[in-house]
Image 1 (cartoon, rainbow, N blue to C red):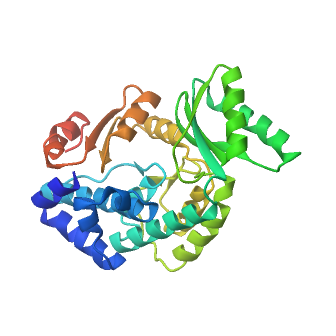
Image 2 (image 1 turned 180 degrees about the vertical axis):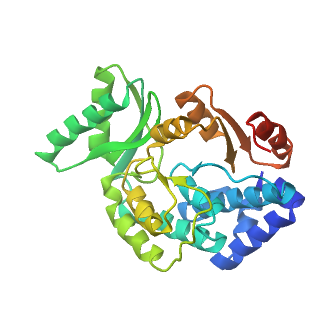
Length: 306
């Protein structure tokens, strides 16, 4: 997808050139040609995803110079940086440097094998929260281990994270309450209290960055509320590292504000699927390559936007 956009768009090529200069290495070459084992390393994957999203957005705006600004923006976890970039709060250069530092800090916060994450299906948010609270209270009396909800993705799909033993116990308890759970193959317990050292590390990196005024509000992961105050962006990004991603609340809020159509900018279509599980009549167009650009005018016209 990144290659197709590069070939078709001078604006996308410019984004990738800026990314390579900012990082001081040819990330574009790694994205285009691999090797995959290097690309999937956290330090490379996070800036690569952000850069791909930024390149797609630049190509889309190049193709449609009069593309209207959205009423609201949002992104899931790493995607919040893409949303802030699209709103003009972050430059491409600062964005990729920040997410690389964020990825490294999250990876280094917890030794391998200490933490874990699991997806819990079939239970609502209150039930999963109660499971985590029960297990954590019991663990606090002995090991001091923690387990918390990490991603409230959609109804009946909640990810938990924490110490590996506590997560395993929560998986077992969820099973006794009618839920199904699966331990995820991830490198660290993201969006859990174990990420506190990473939050402090990111805070230091953010201190070196200037946040520009936002062209439109971005709904923050940590509280599912819109923010257009550039003075709060750093605080919200720091809190996101060890706080839960409230995606279901985010989509419900946006729908309550009258959002009926949304563009998912960047690689993949995961958020389109999650969002429609939250609000069934929400229309989402995934824009990830030149072919999907052709669908944008009709999609926006159906939304009453030109």
